[in-house]
Amino acid sequence: MKQETGIIPLFLTGLILLLAACSPQPVELETASPPPSPAPEETTPSPTPIPISTETNPPAWTGQAVDFTGEWHRTNIYIAQPGDVYISNQTEQGFDFNGSALWYGHCGEIQGTAYFVDENTAFWRYEEDDWPLNEPSPTGTVRFSLSDSGILSLEQSGHLPFGMNAGIGGEYTLDAPEYFTNGVLETLGPERIALLQKVAGENYQEFLGTPLEYGSFTIEEYQENGCSGLFLEGWIPTMGYQQKIYIGDDGAVWANFQSGQCFTNRPQEKLPGFLLFSENS
Image 1 (spheres, helix red, strand yellow):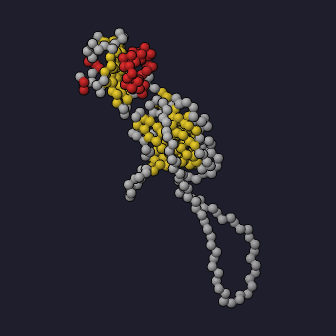
Image 2: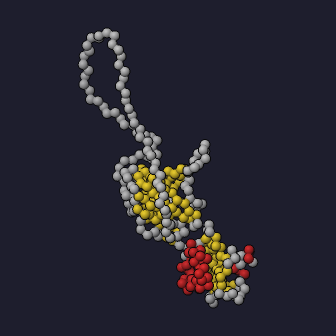
Image 3: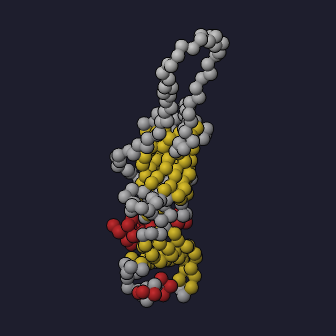
């Protein structure tokens, strides 16, 4: 699943340059002509040390960093928790980025300029905009680390503008991301899926396909009260769609939702009790 992002203005963080300056000493007025003094011995002048800031944020670093640019995709993660980071405009100091991530229906987006702290690590600090005056603004950080194997790791801490449980942390690849699934569609198999598609018709993807692919479900073999088949119960976290589904060995299909919808190919029969919710019992 691909999360598209728009073009967002980039926030540029400035660095403070400390300058040291010297001024000549004042010359005293002559009151008398002193006797000549012997010429001073010649000495080799020592270089004036360059002041180094101890409060640089992020830490100052000078060198040649590895190439971070590209479209990165969060990988080795559950299919309902994708993320994308787009990195561009890399310089000797850092790079611009735009990142977004999902946790089911919760999401968030960040953008800014990250600064290098060594050849394969960059750092970005976030501060909340429009925070009330006289109150400390919540802040967060993201550390970008690029390994020799080509995996970009993002480590986040503190407050970032994401919904509950959503975040940008994880491993990212320039290749196609790899997701792990809940295994529901694999367990159902093509024949049972075809039965659900036939029963729900044009409503299949919205009410059944998406929840079954991304949601949280329990699956068990049900053999009680004259019924024998597969029983599923679950929902999509943050989005609802609480449902109970029964696909009988005899081809009977029931998909009952807590919100009131019900799909079946046995409309002449009474809804089995184990598929009822307390609200519609």
